[in-house]
Image 1: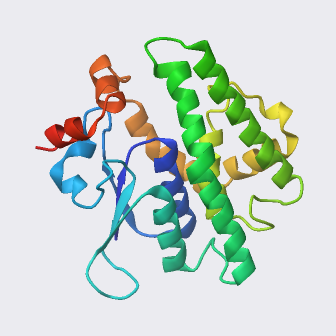
Image 2: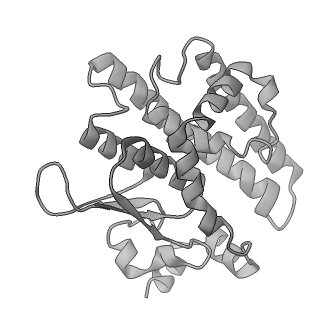
Length: 236
């Protein structure tokens, strides 16, 4: 059994996509990030960056005591190695998947996240910031489109954890100021992943949590005004 500490964000969706693809037994433990659940001491004990997702694997492959993993890219790698799926075992195939996984966690996710923040959540609309992150998201979509012109998936001919990592960050493309029609190879890839039964099942798991009320001003303060001191105080 795997406990998945989760909220329906792009990083959360990555993990449910993998778990649904592989059929691993798991249960969702909601972490309401706008209510401050990520600062609870029992969560910080195994997710020290006060971010979800995180997992507890109660049946690790070495047969030992439970294993905890935080950070979505690390979780995907851990689960791929546990199951032997969606991460090639050969040197070159593994290298390429890891390149695109790191590209997502270091590039597409952070840049699209800033795009969301300044376009949607920032109390003051700053044209420079909005343009900066919309343009950078556009550039990154172009990187994917060029790669997908040569390959069925980001890291080659086979679906992998690199695709699971990137897909949820493309789902809100309209909110990011992008048009999939401008990126035909990316559009083909996006539609293929959206049609997978496991993708549909993963997003269905999010629906009960997405029906909760919109983020309040207090919730935005929790999410967007964190410092070392505020995190320490919230965790007490």
